Structures are given as structure tokens and as C-alpha cells.
Image 1 (cartoon, rainbow, N blue to C red):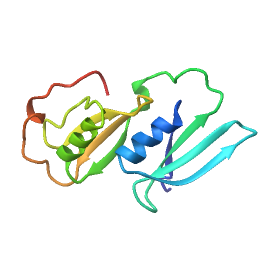
Image 2 (cartoon, rainbow, N blue to C red; image 1 turned 180 degrees about the vertical axis):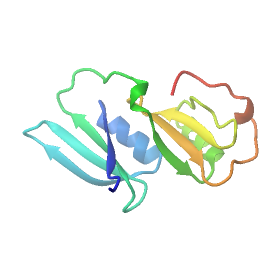
Image 3 (cartoon, rainbow, N blue to C red; image 1 turned 30 degrees about the vertical axis):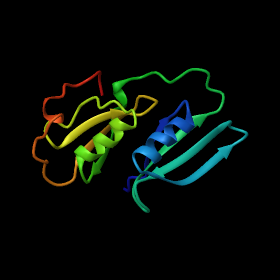
Image 4 (cartoon, rainbow, N blue to C red; image 1 turned 180 degrees about the horizontal axis):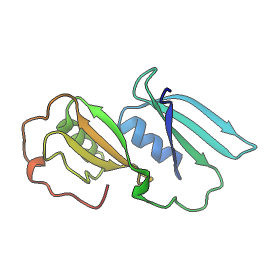
Length: 139
């Protein structure tokens, strides 16, 4: 068995692509528009040959999708959890669960999909403002 991808439905495809590509650094690997089905599928990966996420955009969707923690989360390993969180925060992303432990943080996509960021290797030494920053909302 081989893991292929995780699909998430997105209401605003441009906002989702900005979040996943521009802010998180993923790349679009392929795209399929279905005029008959009235949807667009966009596949994203962190690198060639890596597992993908599939963004499904239904053209005629009138309302944003409901939010539920039952989906769980996407998880990505990063080289520097503090630098990544600082860059995302500077871009307007709320750090819901700050990397207080030097290892793990949570954010959400524009469609409220939880994204876990994990420090590659060992946890980094604790530093402020992250070490004492409280969590916000849910993730």
C-alpha cells in the first residue's frame, strides 16, 4: 500500500493556494478542471515525488464548508520552527498553538484546516516570545 494524497475541500481556491504555496512553500504538481462536474482539483506537494494534498474547489459552492476537528490535521516537518512561525505570523497567519516547546505549532488554512508544523530533528532551545505565548482558539 502506498499513501497518495489527502483531499480537502476549499471555498476560495486563490486564498488556499496563497496559504499552501506562497506561505508554506508547497508547489502545484498538477491541476484538473472539470467543466461537466463544475470543479477544479489542484494537487500540491512539498517536493517532487512526495505525498500530496488535493485541493477540491466546487465552482458552485455558495457557503464556506463547516469546520470540524474530526478531519484531524495535515502535518509538515520544517527546518526552523521559530523562523517558520515568525514568517507566517508576519504574513498575517495566527499561530494557534505556538511552538512553546521548540518543536510543535498549529495554524489553520483559510478554510480552517488544521496544519501541524514540526521541528525537524530535536526540539530547538526554548526562546521568547514563543515560550510564554498562550494558545489561541482551537486547532
